[in-house]
Image (tube, rainbow, N blue to C red; front, side, top):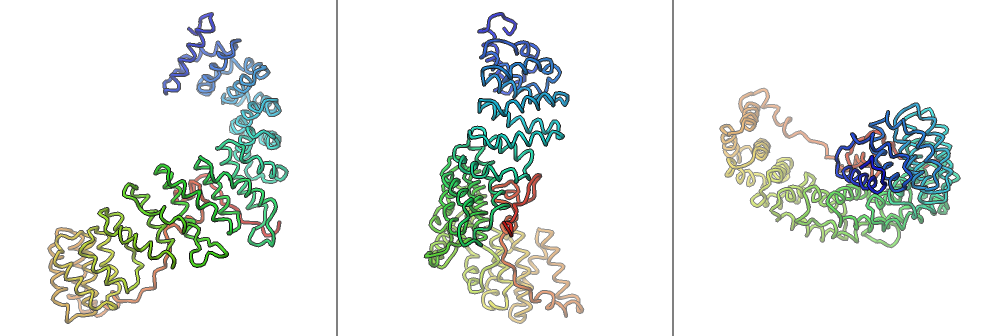
Length: 527
């Protein structure tokens, strides 16, 4: 059908080929037959041929080179779609020898009357740069010209080209900054994400810290006012980009505006919830407070506290983040609400939720309550945590530790390995503090551990028995070993390290520095 003299048959054949490409089928063997129609006069046929060539030009470079002259003629076609398609195909041919031809085509296209062609030219710039980095200076001039474009269709692609070619050349943005701010709401969604990230970096590099100025900076105010409507965007990436813009550049009094937008995103899919909750957890870690008449409850997420309550349908990774955020939001005003909610979670049959409620940071006054829960809590990590807490503060709870050890001794055989090891530690410390009253109980626990099925439990038992009972020299120093005073634990959240990475970035999600990640600059000392 591609060799037919009738255009309608060729168009039908090309539609079938494009349909196969959309389904993931390999139709590269048809390249010679398709490329012969690149000079067809039928506009619809030519567009379909160009779509095919964009897909396979990089794989069939030799055959694509034979049509270079046809593409050059198509760049002068009256139809803007043909001109744009020709440039797109030309930039898809990865052969270094045609770099000068591509450069001339891009220089002409950035001044094309059609904004669509200029947009395609902006996307062609990074492709040419990857083919020949020596052309950077001339390509930067093209980018500078495109940044002055008044059409929002072009600006998003121009900023993308800027980020790919010369992200450190912020001096090029001085004359375009206000125009970019005003055009922000009209740019396409993915262009908005790139543009907001660029403007965030520009504001941190070139504008003064708003907290140090007596009056708001005019340029920063323009940027924030232009980005604020995008908090209502349907695209979660745009909302996250605006959030990090406000977080890093806005005065603290304006940070409350992003809270409602972030909470709205929690209605989305679980993957979106995970990313949003990670960012909220990082924000809560620094706990930016709001000035003025907010009295006791100053955290900006307080009005949305119920949005972080755990649901039975939430996946485990979402539950874990919500629990962390709830504990971070505790204040005098909401402590009763959060505590009542956590008590309900404690009754949950889901072990990961119950285990996540227990931390090794509880005050001594709560140990008696925790010890009572040892009969009802089934999760081994949670039970081990309670035993460890009592063993750590055994001197402060002389009445609780023996009773807890008796309860554990009765069910020692059925306990999990991690609980048995912590029980042995409790027995050792109790023997140190109340040797006469607990000697028989301690020996009974060691006798159970001596014949336990777990090798690790038996090994730990053998080590402790020899240390305490069989070696006179070591037993003299046992109290120094087991009862030595320890420094108070530093209450540092697992999200503390994430603060070094910019919100919304892959490095922040993975908590490690990724390729091409650059730290956000600090506000300049002098502007």
